[in-house]
Length: 386
Image (tube, rainbow, N blue to C red; front, top):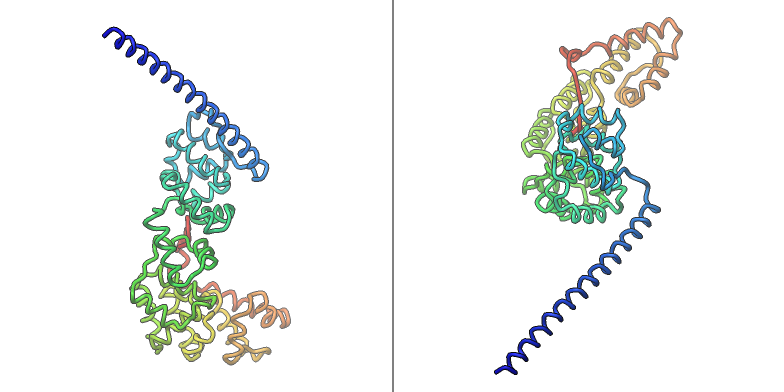
């Protein structure tokens, strides 16, 4: 019995010493791997620093006391900090550690303090959002989509919500939807940059797809991407109201939709502006309604500052028997399309000083005559114009 116990004791001792030996080897191997990884990271960072322009980044051992100190350490000037707090006062009380973490994410993207000011100006709650959700996946996707990190940064400044939209439920499905409609990445990039609300407002149903088809514009046309995106982000009720507005002037629905295909930016005009300009063209200028199909710019010009003053001056020149006259549809259309400087040179400053002064007074008075309450209307734009 004793030899057996002795043998078991020796076996236990051998196994114990073997485990300790393996543990020491494992620890040494881990240290070597960590050292190798650290060396590689340092070399990589060194290479990146030589290749990429410097962006503000907070030091790892930096311990901030408040948000002002964090922002200044990141590279914001006093003026930048003031603008940021004006748009988002609650950032004064923001958690310094969380703020520091978010700014480091922006540094990694290549964004600077001037970019942050623009971002907060149009998205005040941006730094209150979570920026680390699916960040690596989002970064890889958009860097590949935009073709470079610099273009991606430009898109972020234009639409910061690209870092906060739900990546799997909003961004990827929306872009996939446009790709199914025939829009290439080359087409989508300017649309995403120029229309910041493209992702959250996109919705397509059978009726909208039918409208796109009835515009008659082929997928290869330059205007196709504008037609598709503008119809996709518009409410179906709004599109129907705009169609009904044109129908009041004798246009058919198919004719109107083809008109939208020819000039898709008409979908961005308010119903009131279209109605007032159409009324002026048909009622005052005595042009047929169909003229706007050939010259859609008539609906884009400001009624009070361009159309009315030039029509009033044309009447004054005719009453005084002066030449050159603004008479007839072709001449009036040409006069409307001129820049103001060119218009005054051709029809006002060509006359003797006394006559030119008289015409100029009529022109200024016509420009100053505004609709009721326009003077008191205050237009304050903050953030995106969409």
